Each structure stands twice: as structure tokens, then as C-alpha cells.
Amino acid sequence: MGSGPEDHIAVYYQQQVEMLEGFTEMDALADRGFIPGMSKEEEERLAKSETFAIRISNVANMILFAAKVYASVRSGSLAIIASTLDSLLDLLSGFILWFTAFSMQTPNPYQYPIGKKRMQPLGILVFASVMATLGLQIILESARALMSSEKEFVLTRDQERWVVGIMLSVTLVKLLLMVYCRTFTNEIIKAYAQDHFFDVVTNFIGLFAALLANYIDAWMDPVGAIILALYTIRTWSMTVLENVHSLVGKSATPDYLQKLTYLSWNHHKSIRHIDTVRAYTFGSHYFVEVDIVLPAAMPLQEAHDIGESLQEKLELLPEIERAFVHLDYEYSHKPEHAQS
Image (cartoon, rainbow, N blue to C red; front, top):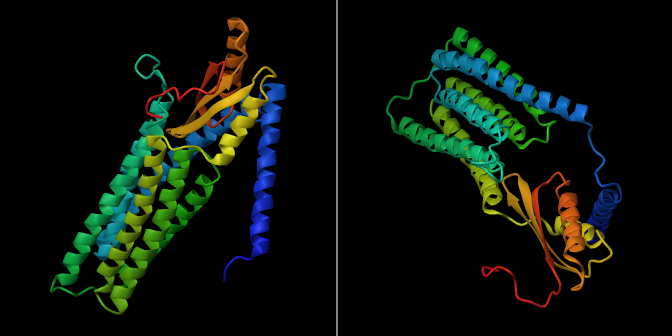
């Protein structure tokens, strides 16, 4: 059923409301010189909560991996073994994300003059690539099992009780961790939340496939593992694509550029024109370039102060890593950079 005219009108008015809210935020920044937000104490509490979320995720991954190894040994299920290998990579991924967060918190202005913000998507990119590689390996092992002549798969009552208990407990813990990590806006913790959600799905598929193979037919176990692997590849391929965009410098949305243009135009009464406004990803944040046109006869000191204060104002926005303000006296020239 397609959307009607009323839906398009509702979307339009929602966009207008969001645009006005953005302009109001820019007016507050222009008038007060800062964006109302968290205090220093609140920021410190948030940082501690984020550190706790990462640590509890890593500890849980270690404990749950040990439990799933035991379930794999007791069951011999290919789907559960695949889920256990996924948990092993969770530990590796956790180390990658922890190292990424640690690297970003230890700046080195001499070796990394523009910071280490790209470490974050790079760490997530490595994480996602490893997960997708695991998916391919699972497909190969499952195909081999399907072609094998050995089709027996039987669990005793004791084995079944242990496997079901462990896998359901692991799934419940992962579900709780997913809900907790999704309360944060930090990209690394959001990656943990995605990983916990992925584990909930793979644990359920692994257990369901093992039980079907035990009660119906043995081929359902490797088929479940293949389904799990395809889900792995799809999920993490999308994550790879998303983070590649942040590394290569994708433009900000038109709405965000509109906010920056509004802020720049209302920055000072002497600004005659806004020549260029660019914002592009640099890791998880934006680099911003703004070209403003000032009167040709304006003294250099005054022009410099206008440009510098606009740069400082732009860099107060939480999404912006660094802003560059270019001053000009006319706007009819060709673009400054040859690549443009």
C-alpha cells in the first residue's frame, strides 16, 4: 500500500520543524557563544559509563565464549560451533575496539597533527571485515558437511539439557547487554551493541538448527550454519560500506549544510556573501570549509578577527572536528582548488 498525499505533507512539515530547530540552535550558539549541553561533571560521568560498558562487554564475551565452547563440545553441532567461533572473534573485535578507543584518547600532536579520529571507523572496519571473513569460512565448512556421507546427529537428554540451558543463558545476557549499550551515542559502544544483537540472532539460529537436526534430520544443522553465515556477511558488509564512506570524506546532509550556512551568514553584519560551505566526514566527525566575502577595504586585523571567531564558533558544534574559514573580497572567481 503506497503512501498518500497526507504522508508526504506530514514528512514535509516534520522536515520544516527540524530545520527550524536547527536554526534555533544556531541562533543560541551565535548569541551565547556556546551550545547548552552537559556540564563538566555530566561529561565525566558519561565517560565513566562508556568505559564501564566496554569493560563489561569484554568480560561478558570472555565468560560466554567459555560457556559456548563447552556447549559445542557437548553437542558437536556445526551451527553451535559456528556461533562459538563468532564469540571467539568477539574477543578479538573487543580488543580492536578497545585499542581504538585507547589510541583516540592519547593524542600526539607531533606524529598526528590533525588527531586520531579516523582510528574509530578504521577499528570498526577491521572488526567488520573479520566478521565477514568468518561467514565465508562457515559456508565452506557447512557445504562440506552437507556433501559428507556422515549424516548422524543425535543428542542425549543430558546433552540437550546442557546445550539448551547454556545457549538460552548466553542469549539472555547478550540481549541485556545489547539494550544497555544502545543507550549510548558513542560509535564504538554502538558497535558493541550491534555485536550483541548479532550474537542474540546467531545463538538462536545455532540452537534452533541443532534441535531441528536432533529431532528431524541431520542436514538441518549445516543449513542453519549457512543461514547464520549469510546473515553475518550481509550485516558486516553493510557496516564496512558505512565506515568506508566516513573514511573517504562523504559530504554532510543538505540540512546540516543549511545550518552551517545560516550560522555563517548571521555571524557578523560585515559578511557580504557566503561563497562556499563544505562539510565532509573525517572519521566520525566533520571537517568544515567556509568561504566568506568581506569588504575589500576592511583592515586585515578586523577581517582576521571575524574569520577566527567564526572558526571558533563552528568548532563548538559537537559534530565538527576542525573548521577552516577562508576570507575573500569577491565571489566571481573560479574555485580555489584545481580538483574542484
